[in-house]
Amino acid sequence: MVCETLDVPRSTYYRSLNQKPSSRDRENQKLKRMILEIYRKSKQRYGAPKIHRMLFNQGLSLSLKRVQRLMRKMGIFSITHKKFRPYSKKTSIQERTNLLKRDFTTMGLNQKWVSDLTYVHTSQDGWCYLASVMDLHSKKIVGYSFSRRMTTEVVMKAIKNACLSQPTAPGLILHSDLGSQYTSEELTQFLQQKDIQQSFSANGCPYDNACIESFHAILKKEEVHHRCYRDFDEAKVAIFQFIEGWYNRNRVHSGLDYLTPQTVEDQLNQSLSA
Image (cartoon, rainbow, N blue to C red; front, top):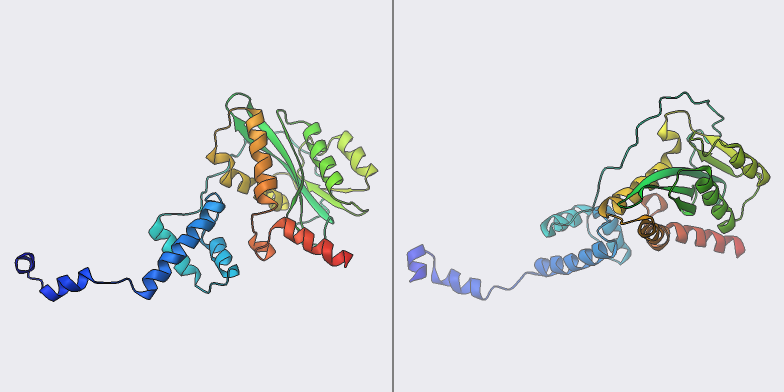
């Protein structure tokens, strides 16, 4: 009666009852499960390019467009938020030597470090400050420090932590912006004792320190802007977990041929000791 009313052949109705998913449909369902597992393990931070590479590493050959199409159907995408930008300073700043000159290439570990400060907001303690130091060869955060105040001390602690975690040799360059924390006499004397050369970005030119700026943008997009930290201590734990538990050891980087910073460091150290 339904078929007659809708003017549909009875054979079409029975065929639809017995219809089985095609091999392509079964394959897509399997891929969706694998994509979702990678997506969840990354805490929603990976987009299609990184998920595509992870699937490739697992031995699957498929196009990036197919991964993008399946992710759209599932309604999942990489989480992104705009970063906080503080107001620019109006006071004049003395230019200093730029040894790096936007040459971010390296031949090995601990040849060029970059450092910067960024802001993290908490409900009870207001703005807190993170100083980070990155090795340009491995993209690893080799030192960092978190503080309630934006002082020379937080920068000094981050750099001292980097010196403790990594072997340093004469000729190592530390590049930063012209913030007063980095141009302080205290920091200059410490770096001279360590035989570390200071390099500075041009005033108002973030491109000179793009790599560490990029890390702080990743931190904001993938972690900070998705949380509401109650206080300094809660934010400190979350940042530690992000840097040590995710960024350095588990987050793959396209610029590192989809390896993690820790893997790059470990492979190079193994090759040098062999």
